Structures are given as C-alpha cells and as structure tokens.
Length: 272
Length: 52
Image (cartoon, rainbow over all chains, first blue to last red; front, side, top):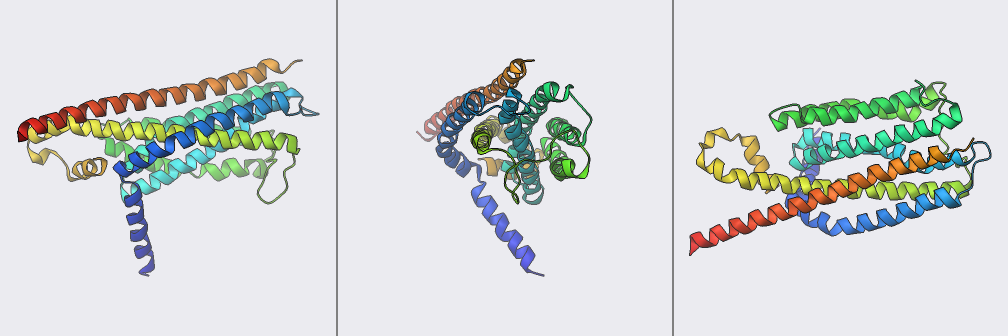
C-alpha cells in the first residue's frame, strides 16, 4: 500500500530535479544544435531520396511519393499528442510550470503537423480515390485529433488566469488521448477506404525495402525536427516567463504582498 | 494523368509549414535571449550602484 505513494514521491523528486527551468535552459542550449542540424540533414536526405530516388509504385505510380511526407506527419501527429497528454498528466499531478509550458508549446506545432497530415492525405487521396475527402474512420479520427489540438490551444488562452487555462487544457488533453487508439485501430475496427498499416511491430513490413528506408529516414528527420522546434519554443517560453517575472518584480514589491497568490510565488521560484 | 502537381503541392506545403515553424521558433528564441540579457544586465547594474 505504501509502495505507490513512495514511488510517486520519488518520481516527483526526479521530475522536479530535471524539470528545473534553469537546469532545463542550460541542458537544452547544449542539446539544441545536436537536434537541429541532424534534423535538417536527415530530413533533406529522406525527402530527396523519396522524391528522386525511391521507385514509383506499380499501382499508384509516382503519387506514392506523397507517402514520405504524409506518413511521418501522421505518426508525429499521434506521438505529439501523446507527449501533450503526458505533459498534461505531469502538470496535473506535480503542478510543474515546465510541464504547462511544454504542453502549451507542443499544441501549435502538433496542430500544424496534423494539418499537414490531413492536407497531404487529401492531396494523395484525390488522384488515388478520386476525392479529396471521405468521412471514413481513419480520416475522421485524425480530423478529431486536429480539433483536439485546436481546442487545447484555445483553452489555454481562454482564461484571464493563466493557471486555470493550463488546468482546463490539461484535462482536455487527457480526455482527448482516447482518440489515439481509435486512430491506430480504426482501419482494423471499421471497413475504411484508408489502407491498413503497412508497418507494424509484430509483422514484417508489406512494402519493399527501397521504399521503407527513405520512409524511415524521413520519419527520423521529422521527429528530430519536431523535438528541435519544441525545445527552441520551450526555451523561448521559459525566458519569456523569466522576463515577465523580472518586469513584474518591482511592481510586486511596490504593491501589497497579499495580492500575490502562493501558487504564483511558487511558480516564480520555479521559473527563476 | 500526371500526379506531379499533387506531389509538388504536398512537398511544398510540408517544407513551407515546417520552415515557417522553424524560423518563427528561432526568431522568438533570439528575441527572448536578447531581451532577457538586456534586463539582467540592467538589474545587475542597478544592484552594483546600490552596493557602492
């Protein structure tokens, strides 16, 4: 019975130690170039390979090349939302500012990636299916994911008290995580126009290696790029928080101490 | 029917959106770094003046 609270406390300590904004800024500044440059190089190699070198499909022709941007974005849309839900959970359990900021920064980037996934899917669907859009389970569940991202962005900005916005958005993000298994299994649970997964963990891929390699390289590049963008945005957000704190410090000293809530004080200490 | 316009549109859109996200993140970071450095420098200067 006591093991779970003990484990939670240890996890909390670990999280607080490594999620300290000052330590995060130092660590992320060192990490940033090691993410950014590989992301640019690997993505450029993957896209060039997919566009110019990889073979055309015997059935789909050259339009299969859209797969090298569509599939990595689709995977990233889901994994990005998983990261958003995880940050929301950390925020609700340990109430750490860095988790709130990370969730706020993942939202817009995840929405853009999901938007690209939907748009490139539509551009692939038109020559293959003869239509830009069908209300099938896979497409609709990804559209729901896009709206969840938009809802998260809107909810963070919907309250005058930023903390209430973070709490409400975190609850939405956690509730919305139910969409992730629906997206994953939609092509198995329902009869969809969208094809089933060509790559699974349990079976050998059903596509040729000449197509698989550029796809995997694009996926690695897109993932590195996603993390690099999030870290850059998060570093900026932590600095902006510190700027707000420095600017508000003289005003806070001038006003009565009762106007500053304990929670705000605690956050100020965390950010500083 | 050629699929080239669809392929170019998909790649163009992806590169444009990710490029915009990357550039806006870098610009925001540079701006925040500059502003924070200026604020901390002015705060340190004020502290030094107070101690002397």
